[in-house]
Length: 478
Image (cartoon, rainbow, N blue to C red):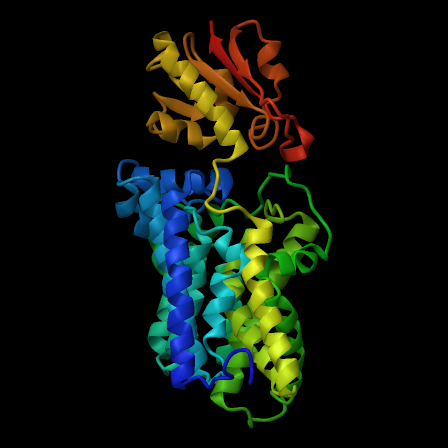
């Protein structure tokens, strides 16, 4: 008897396993979100939250391409309630995506369909970013909904919805490019223009707001960016990180990719493939690997301010999980009961262990954020600095001080500290100061118009970007 029932996609056992896995992991995500003092995603999480939070006051933020306009629009109502509300918004998106993934697997008639949401919700990149205000969750959902709708033959709605994917994350344009070829090779000519719908809507809105023709390009923060702080890395970076990112499932992804690609090799010479096979080839294989390849190339070339962050792979966890289960089924179906039993037990154990080997739960407050709390405590103890304008780099400070970071009378980025007027405060930190904001500490220490008020260093030293020992220095402009 096997470790778990080898189930068909519409069997009672498959449904029971799905509800069991989904319920347990959903409770984990909800508890993790509630009890975590910290958050995933670093300063990016806080910045996305702040953009959404203050977009109702500063309307230009609704079209800020770094903030991702679709995410800003959808998250902004909840952002008025606080950071945790956006965290639970993202958790809801994760769970909805996992639910739809099971429906997708069932529509594809994939055996052991319950394993798809199991691989997704247990993936280190998903669980390790489950307490955040990042945009990867929403971006991934566009691809998930697209897959679900085309499997139900609703190509018009699927195309219209996925056309907004680049405004949840810019890499969505890579997915749209693959879908263009999918439609071309399947002769769905009428659907091709629909892929441009979201871009047209936002380009018109952006042009009306800014007067810039081709706003999508001219306002994109990654096109022709001058940021070279992050450098570049190995062409194998994402491959070497793949198992820690996707879990043990990635091994089955590689196997399934090979056998699926071979089975579809006649695509360009024959019309024999059915619609499900085309979806496997173009959408599941094509879109996910094109996305993976795009990030591999960007980091290798150091282009578009790529930092080699593995969390971006969150977007393709669902298609990779579909491939993983296909690969698992292909191997398991060739094994005897004892061997299959051992394979199933090992895969389940390693899948569950993966995220706990990579991260801690609940999420603890980050080391840099802990140091910022020392600054906040010092400011509370020195009422003479209350209400002073602050120049700082990490938006976590402004969030904790309840300061509008887009109100130039109260707050401005550290990079503009040379504009400081008498009485203004400048908080320099070793992470963002010398890197993103291009403000070395000597800019302040060698300028006699800045008076050092206090400095903080952790009891246990830790290094930040480019090897700087993390410190915080607070100055006042004379």
